[in-house]
Length: 297
Image 1 (cartoon, helix red, strand yellow):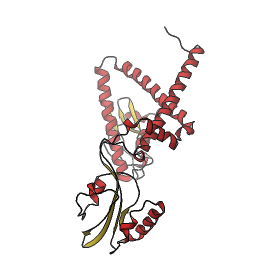
Image 2 (spheres, one colour):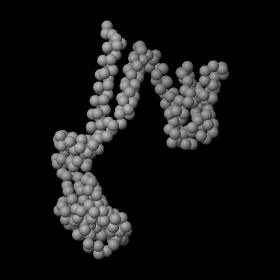
Image 3 (tube, one colour):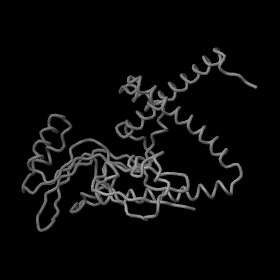
Image 4 (cartoon, one colour):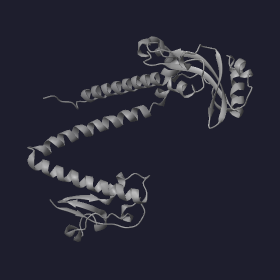
């Protein structure tokens, strides 16, 4: 086994001719002729295989600078040497390995082309990416068994403030009027240390986070729609908390649509993409056969 490594210098990652890679200096006789890559283009050599600076530069992430870039380049070169060493041994020891690999490479190449073609088909039909609310709801109602909760989810309002005597919040947080909720959000943005006044469902760990000082029992078992005032102290500062549990989803219950929207959209999009690709492929095969391009022996 023969491995040759060269060096380069400077500080910039974008061209590895400007990055110092100090690994091992050996005589590089093959670079003395004027054919093939120039001496400055070659990073390493394994027998007749060359690792070019261009390859290392291509695979080095643009976000890496300075020492990080140098470290990555060194690792890439060592991995290249390892791969060449193993491949060389495999070719010597495994019967007909080159043909086996070539067949697999051809198959893999065609699969890559199929993937790129599918991506192009989808890109050419941007309307496929638009999923309406009606489609989402229809899918949700048609397949309820797909959207069963495996854990608890909670929907609640919460305000925590350093201001004392904010008793009016007990009544104000009982509202279901969207305009009143907006007013509460506006008030909280100025006066609250922490608040949550949206109706999304969250896991129970979010409730545990705000349960400190809750002296009405287990906050997860609070009565729905009741506003609870309580308080807690952090770093000698007292916070006055107000909590209202809106809804609970238990394991085995159907998940609310709001928690399923993204999943349903992905399902619908994947179905559309698969249908488009399958139909296009079927048409192309039929056209190829009709044109006499396909022959079975």
